[in-house]
Length: 435
Image 1 (cartoon, rainbow, N blue to C red):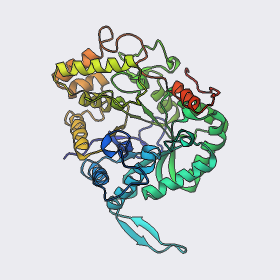
Image 2 (cartoon, one colour; image 1 turned 90 degrees about the horizontal axis):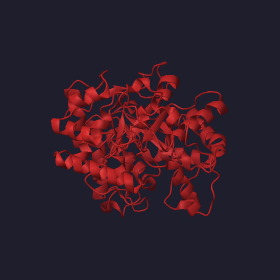
Image 3 (cartoon, helix red, strand yellow; image 1 turned 180 degrees about the vertical axis):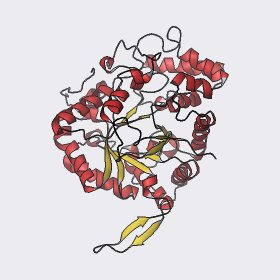
Image 4 (cartoon, rainbow, N blue to C red; image 1 turned 180 degrees about the horizontal axis):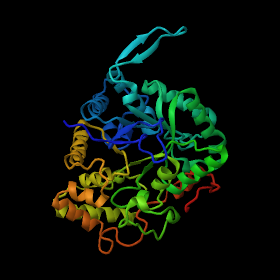
């Protein structure tokens, strides 16, 4: 199988290289939330307590990672302690045993040091997160300094790697205050970096205004930009392209007008502000919008409101009318944009990795992986006639399922407020909803 093409990453930033980031990344990254019980009934009995390396499901996950890295050239894996409440990181560690051959080095005076030589560690990007952990609501979030340090150490042990490439702040919109992030979490993350536990630091979270708010507050507090990367999800797909096409001044919940007719590079969007002005890497995730763009029903916990879910169902109908696979179209739309180096896609089987690799291969065949052409030109080069017709109908701003200037997304801040209210805590709302 042809390897998945790659795009420059840390070496392609306009204001200089960021040597803490990988030089290049595969245009599809392996989202490792799939290595848990989160998305299907088949693995519902698997927890950290019952996790068994010999379990056939777990063996399938390990083989999936091996296939993704060795056979398709995926070089970026993204996980979190939250995924399976530890199972995802453990599975990655078991996979690393087979990918990274052990070689003992006894030169250390106090203990045997293990180096690994089959695949050099610097050829695989292992990113994880901290801040969100257990299923029990009272134990789900912990942004304290002590837990931040403990989590980073635990992730290193679970994944059996010498260091974490990008240590990321997980869903900070759920932090009870901005102060705890600035006074405890972020300084502890910086300490992890100084200790060599990670190479780079990253932001995550759903609301783009909150990510940018934390970025600005960090800049003011520490006098320098401590962040190397921003990982976003749900903001570059068939119903929401605000990551690239929404000016920062319009990052609010209503009345948003996407400027998709313009060149994305000319819009002061979240991606462009961080990349062009602050030399940060920006990645995207969830091109299927966490199940909205698959043939199946989305999970019950999906935060999308009924109008958005109905609009996505209408998009599925359009695809069915043209004999187009909605998931394939959604993936191609996301991975084909040249301004997004890597799109994370949750894949739990070799078959799913093969399907993603086949779609990514279209870019290579059309010589469009690192094209300077605009997104629409690239799409015309890689999509079939039926796929183009379906996409045009889905994107029709007058008559398509996502017509008008409605904000076809959901409110991540409201979700945080509702979460704390279930614990009987009235949150002092600090998160910005508009920039």
